[in-house]
Length: 371
Image (cartoon, rainbow, N blue to C red; front, side):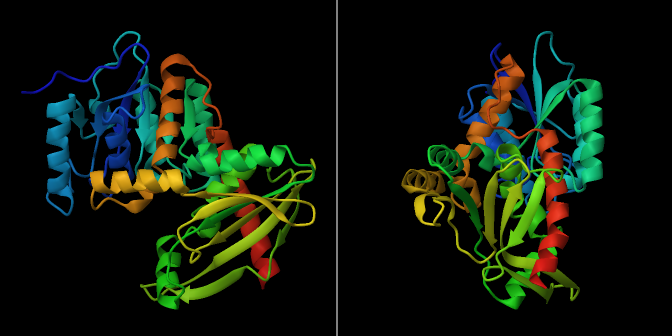
């Protein structure tokens, strides 16, 4: 028998997931699964808006799997499904509605407006928020004018390895933190060319954007406060490669740089498309001796990954690696929506905007240094 429609309690946000995507593949689906499993106590998933699979994509790849997920969620959890945000029912008296938008970056400005129209007081956006600085600035203006809060899915902001490295460094005089991000592409022209084309916004706006958000959030980095940027030429590599379409793309396959701010902070970022599947942070002393390193995944994370891989066979493995961070982020954002509790460490739209500005500022500087 069907359960009645899902309703948020007084201490919960009524969550509207916009963009579920295909089960096992879509980030939105994984958000849904976490909330339906009560991983985020302040979040109650009440509505899913899925324009593609409830529209043109219904009979295509992933369509049948989506329908199966929809039926189970309606039957077991009372989740209501809609083709667009305009179909949401009126917001009940006293309810607090949160839109969790997990679609294509280019659609975010429109979806944000529609979510506000549909009674959402808080919006959670996946990184980077919008394709350009201009688009984000427009969103900021609208959010301010309409009195709503936009928070960002920059999950490394709340991640254990980042928090531990920052805590350790704070107790050491003249310590230096380096954030390292790795990926598992094959170091071949074919593999990297495909990567460069698919992520044509470039490494700094794509893979390393999380690290730049950390710099903006915790190290006072902004385009007005950067004193110097120095690329590590020995580590870094920039290539021009043809993608599958035959068109050529120039990007970093690996980059390392150190930023000094006018206010006296110094921090490094290292990103490598072919560096493996472990990301980490290090703390070094003034003689460049490593004093501390914490990796993601660590032993505790790996045990959790094994559990999740058995629970959701065939799902994207990066969901499992980042599972605790997604939970933490959604919980903080949902608690803020429901009760106004401070969302510690969570990036705001203003931080997302500055992060994109920093990315755009750094690219030509680093390219020049590596020529």
